[in-house]
Image (cartoon, rainbow, N blue to C red; front, side):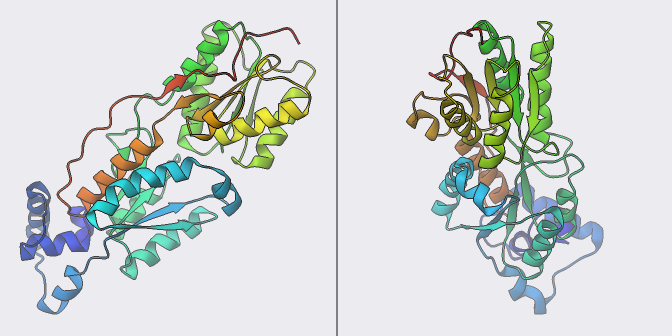
Length: 332
């Protein structure tokens, strides 16, 4: 029944018991679905259906060392918790290694009644998770580019390629013509969107990327990619990284190799995390408003769990923040 209406079992209980602060459109959807299915609550299951964990799950598919070194998720969690804590909700964080482990975890959390909903990270092509969570009746929200045709709500800034487009335009304006890109895993939706924006922006001025290297977001991969790029016969004069953590690794790697940033190499990150303002030179980066996205996702999920929370539209798009890590191109 909960799966048919796309809500939690707690929301079903609220609709039939007329308790809680369930939004009227949600209550109506539940009652309509029940009528269509010919379903009614049994007295013996009433206590179970009224139970609420007031806990939401955040499952991250990252190695523990990568997660610990990437402040992106600290910013995301800050945004989510800012909405959950005032309403008495908590966040259950799990790390998993692969899609099978992640899917099994959702099924276990749902069957044990440990959470009321889940925040899905890292949208992928042919992502099996939304269909799985609908099947097991666990409300969810997916972090990623807004998609009105998705089977679950997606929350993120629109025009995901805009920040990368601005970054490349900025570097072109500084005279850079050999520009490389260090991306995240190829299967991620945002990797595809940002790489496409990178290549298309260069193509508009008749250029090709100096190189495009894919990584797993780890420190070692960022260092290895940077070493490969700056050690090439025609090394790039600028590198755009898929996140700020890798960009910081790139700056350190270049400096250890005797290159000055930005005199010899310009560096651009992605996220606009606080660490970018703390190092020298301060990092030019793309701001994707991670905390705002986390807060918006939490509001959408709380509403799907039956809370009376306004689903305020998330407006804006990623934009470039220019600091000191980019400068005019100089001949190698």
